[in-house]
Image 1 (tube, rainbow, N blue to C red):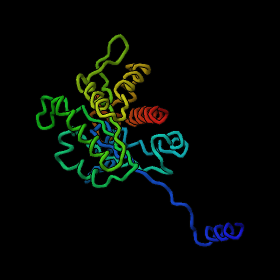
Image 2: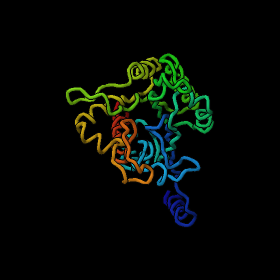
Image 3: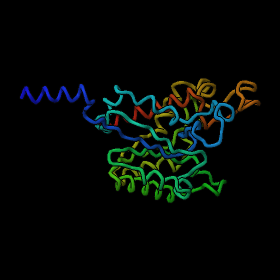
Image 4: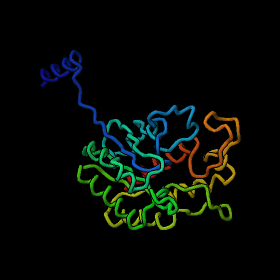
Length: 261
């Protein structure tokens, strides 16, 4: 026995032989609130977009060894690559029709995760090019969940992250109407994992307060601060870096809660 152990030690020392590292991917599919704008082709992010940032853009740094140990019940990996495929302006339907889902599906491997967060654009009835009825929205989520499972990967449904309105008596309210409930209903129907990001973000933003959240988390600032927005910006849907990091931390919190179940 000692002889074989000595041979193994020599192999490790002289050939670099070691147990293969388990690397998994987390695919993010969704809209602008999740997107990584630094990956947009043909654009200079600093000049054309910054400080605009989706929460998926800052999710990779949360995949530390310590956090992965806490996610063992959900994700069995030594390291994780976050592959952010979310794109601004996309609903469940347009994400599918443009072939963005097909591209993810082809690359999926057993043990990967697919995190889906839609709803902002699905509900935009006035924008017919992206609008999806509630029933259509549910059908596309079903498709993403079922096809993820076909590849041996794990789907996680997220309710859409909160916008910075409406506020009532110091508390942020649900702006997503039936689309919030629809995501939950499909997850329950299919027995899929679900993170109620809408509720998590409403509660968290309410704790921080409307003034703080408006100034620090969402894209609200005066003129002359950023090259991409010389006239300033007033946007209560999309995030500045601190807002993106805060939401990414909420998603991680949701992950850890799922892993504990």
